[in-house]
Amino acid sequence: MSTRLKEGQTAPAFELMDGEGKPHRLRDYKGKTVLLYFYPRDNTPGCTTEACNFAESHKDYLRRGVIILGVSTDSSKSHEKFAAKYNLPFPLLADTDAEVTRAYGALKSFVPLVKKSRRVSFLINGTGKIVKIWDPVSAKVHNEEVLSYLEDNPV
Image (cartoon, rainbow, N blue to C red; front, side, top):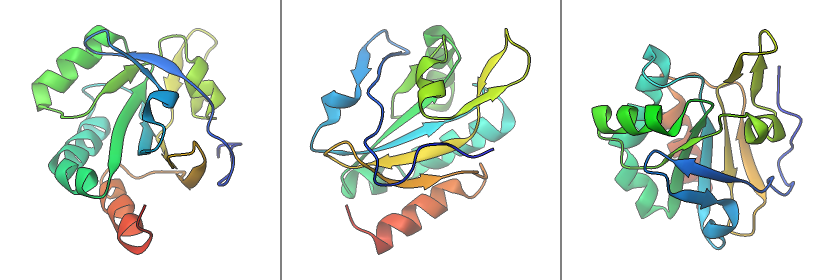
């Protein structure tokens, strides 16, 4: 299943809380490039690999002017514990009602009561346009894919 959003479109607006209860809105990042990555669950093997790979390269992203924001349907409390356990230097945003996940076409549907994100990422420029979509994503190599893209396509 792929996202219905397309490169060149305006990214859907959002307001989500991080693990510390701080709100993050896409408009807060106007003028900056955002890597918005959706992932299924905190503390699972693939999601931990993906988050830790992003964390190891965090300075490379900052040097390129890219802000990383992770999103899943887990709670802020779960995000707080996950970020602390792995010393993640970027916000993890709680989309517990899955509205943002759904708006980005990243909802993986099982049964009606289970809302879980698929692994998909969006690179959003400073004007709010989606410049690159990675869908599907392999947790092990995604960080390298994004860095390679940024190397060839400076933001």
